[in-house]
Amino acid sequence: MKIFLLLMLGPLCLLTSCVPHRELVNYQRGITESSQHIDKLPEIRIQANDVISIEVFGPDEKIVAPFINKTTTASNIIDVDAIQLGGYLVSDRGEIAFPQVGNVAVEGKSVIEIREMMSGLLEQYMKDPVVNVRLLSFRVTVSGEVSRESSFNVFNDRISIPEAIARAGGLTDYANRRNILLVRETGEDREYVRLDLTSGDVFSSEYFYLKQNDLLYVEPIRAKSGAILDQTSKTVPIITAAATIMAVIINLTQRNN
Image (cartoon, rainbow, N blue to C red):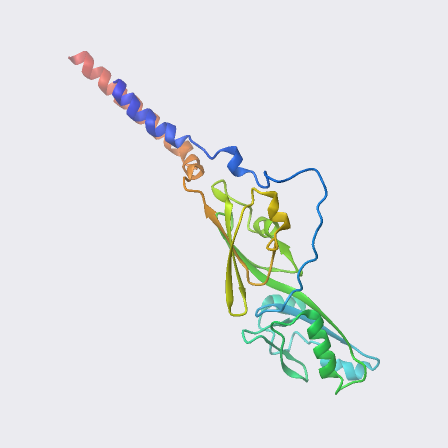
């Protein structure tokens, strides 16, 4: 009987184990109550699948009109988000189709460089054109141990790692906060970076802000105790019932003997 109880209680103890609290807390190391200097963000370079806005202004509205983006007819607008934003979707070849001008290569250029380039191209159509260029949207992907694995558009010029994780529903209880993998593609190069979200040093990391087409992968911890714990409420009644039945059988057997 004692052996039987030990066999039944052993798995039950395993089932009721859980992830230690310290493994669930972010930024627990290196954070002090003091101010921290924020470095200037690196200049953004336009990549494929970005959505950019290019606005043209001039003294003569009739001359400017042909260069205004008409989202209902522009052939290069093949993305729903681009249509909603009224911007230009950068193709896989790194180009946009600009009215009257045609295909323009923008990949790898900053918004300032694109503005200067477009001003030069438009000078053959109008005098002293004023051009405004902005990054409207770019895509990032968050996968692994988050509530909702997803790829989504960022309607801004930047998003931090905590913000991206929040957009994906947050980390699960068995996410490995000490080993977050960031995959970044720049041109023909692919970079792999490991980040520790339990350390306050992540705030000063050059990778704290995500870039276009970044992939953030949250690895699981080795022992998914959290997942087992989720099943405890379903498993315990079964074990209890089985233990009760076995106890009755053993008791009846002993009486008969």
